[in-house]
Image 1 (cartoon, rainbow, N blue to C red):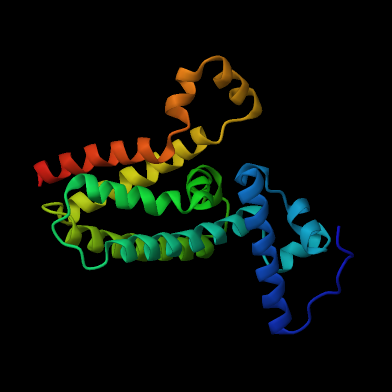
Image 2: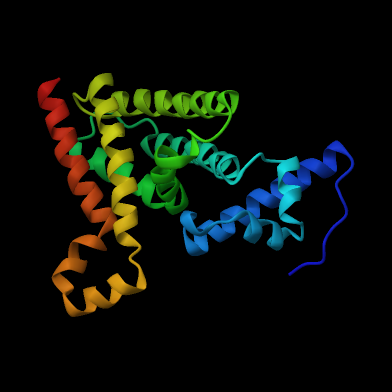
Length: 218
């Protein structure tokens, strides 16, 4: 553990400390999963007393929600960048691009589960509003990019596809990171692991089906 550090005094020092806390939470969540992130572990990694975190974030939930908000921007950047100027892409290609963009963001996929279950409902109204504004801006940008790139997908179809992508990625990510007990169980019953551990393939197959249906309905 790092030795306790002096309290940050200047605005610049406080911003550096805030970034350090986010980095620590990101590292711990990536290594052990979001559910295992605690205030004590985060502050210990930075060299602070747990009570000091509240000078930068009011709670563990607010700290993790900050990472989720960051994740929305990263997803938008990857997805919109991957689509580029493409036009007339078939459903399977669109689904694969969306799946690729989420596979590159495992922490965000993990956070998507916890945002709904515990994070956004446990912070102050204005903090929840700021998260929703950022998430909605990213969602709208991706909707427009998908609607323009997918053959016959349209705006409504793009929205359906993104909704399916968020919910499926959150669920499939949890399946793809089994506990020690489940890993042993999958060794005994490999057929169960076959579906659980195929994050990208499963997600792409599901999203292809959704995209095909959205195009037909459109």
